[in-house]
Length: 345
Image 1 (cartoon, rainbow, N blue to C red):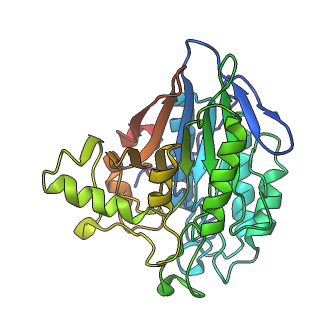
Image 2: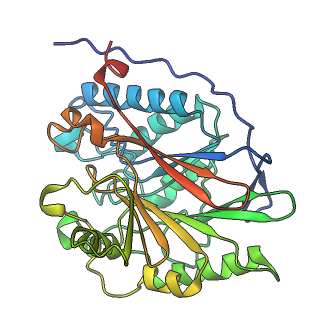
């Protein structure tokens, strides 16, 4: 058996923290240079006696991906941790979150996160509010509590400014957890009040001009990911544009919500600001395709714990790089874990 040695994380050169006006964060983009975002998802750190090997592998994968890509901003799209005792040996999600925070703080790169369905399982020791308060206390973490009068915890916006205006808004959304009290009650989704908050915020940021283009980051996929993939497989290329990646879950599984209230995608198509969505949740899906004018992308997962034997499927997993251009357009690239040599001693 190969011995696994943790790679020591270190500071990665970057442009530093953005400004914060008490409501929105704002980066000033350097003209002629892409603003680089690294999306990481489904880290699934367990920090218990049952997952020491998996945690070392996930740690090394994160360090490798961050140091390889050298982003301006890191966005974690949920399930950073796995407080399920039968897998990790721990239900202490604050302890697990502290591990995540220590790791990302060590890079000294601005980073933020949204919650997934596993971060605050019903039997975990701490709530979403408590974890959000902890994350927000970290020097380089941009997560904020967000409007307490709307659904979810941690809805917040990070703007990217050009020479004289905002060229892109990055909207972080809590896609909530379950319809009932457990995983078996099916998943929740983005609620109507969050959709209205999104619209109101973008209008405020846009002022009297055209709507600022935006990208949304959340954990659970939309039903339209399934619809677009089905049309793509049927060759309906006039309706869906394929960019990269694939759906690799068994039976083309897309773990979207069965909750019928709130249709984020339809509302965003009508609204006109949203140009791309980035989610996680289904660890072997990494498709990126444009449907009804919105690019739908699954971030590549890091997970070494939740899926059995997933470490053998390293070409399906890794990170996702988003490059924002001067004109507010963007490009997406996959950054796969191409070899085990990078994470083993």
